[in-house]
Length: 260
Length: 298
Image (tube, rainbow over all chains, first blue to last red; front, side, top):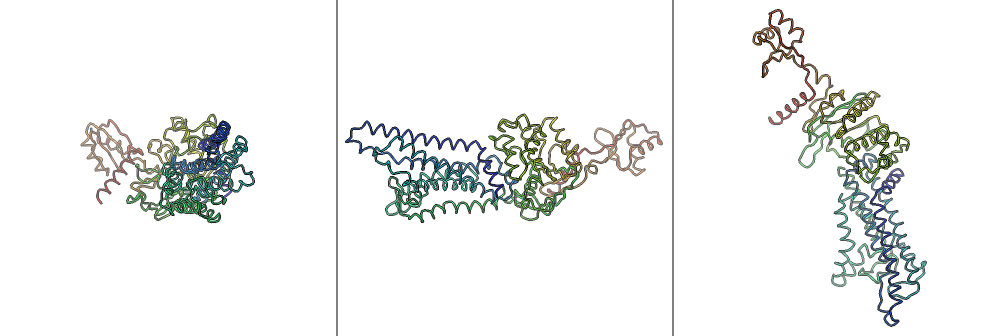
């Protein structure tokens, strides 16, 4: 298993799309920095009476949302890139145990996603604190890092969940296009559909969608989002695990049964 | 040693491999022949554990491929030279394979030199010609210094130098006692490279024989001013004589010396006496025509 992990790490590291995706995540952080700078400047220029009208979405949460999609794409490419070129056959002749290949890919993608996600969210938080400072802009929390860290950790877990979901979807569909289409549906379309359901289903469905889980896991809820917040932290964790475990099991069975 | 036993594989309603049994012995190059869709690549994929057979089994060195701990050290394979990610370099591509099978980095460098890619070891594969990709695929097959090699169409896209290089490489590997299974559609090249042949058609075994037997002398072509008289003489002496289009006789059962003596005894002049071995291509075409005829009779 160590050989398989080292191999998949080597492969992911030397894959060009990896650096592209990580570059996009860095660009997202850059964009959030710009947004923080713009918010601070706008707040300063507004007459004091109108400052209450300024609302800026919590920047780490925006980073969380965008990084989720980026790393989900990274997860997709870690498998579909090999199916697209036929290299999957080389992989399976080099490492004939397909379960081990899937596990190794999942391990590597999961760790990369947690680390990248946490780094991106923390960098966004730092940029926000630095540029916005203690201006009481609505949507921006002035809470110290120690208070927000659980939420940031939950976000990075959620990003890893998206990445692993992407990996498993790519293993199941063997197609980048199909896997990304499903991901975008889960990430963007379903929350909108859920939000427009009649009560109480809007909140029920909104609570179990993948993007809603980080806030519920951290116990902060989802105050600025269309997502619901009915789950307790343990329940949110269980749903998060299910989003990975179920597709993973399907992928493992299909990989073992299908011709490569 | 590769053992294929009663292998059957279907894709939907199409039977790709149908009760196929053959052995590939070490110490010689075994050519694997058959028309497109005969099941060659499927058989190779099953040997490598990529496709799951409906029934039967394929063993390498007595074991199933997917039971091998470090498969590249026992079996080297080139299935599809295009099956690499263009963004990688030869060094990067071979490095992850080496890591998976605990093969040292010095071995990666040495196979890259051996296949003549040292100058482009750090260039992206995307810009490579088919010939260069084939060389990279061969480097991957040789990486683990395996006792068994499976190569599907390795000479595709190689220039004449490359074709000769791979012929000598494969003959050298076989001479070292390795098992080499080689598929190709280039009959003339196969004739020069292989010692033994496994021919399949429509998923079934058509021939499993040495190259020498398959291409042995089959008849003697004779041209004479008195063909009819000569035919009578040769038939009386036990030969089987068939007139050919464009004049001349095809004679079986008598060798050139005997034909010359008989003609001299009867004072029949000869213009040409040529012992003819079938080329591999002719023999192969004949075998395939037989397969087609059998199929039509079913």
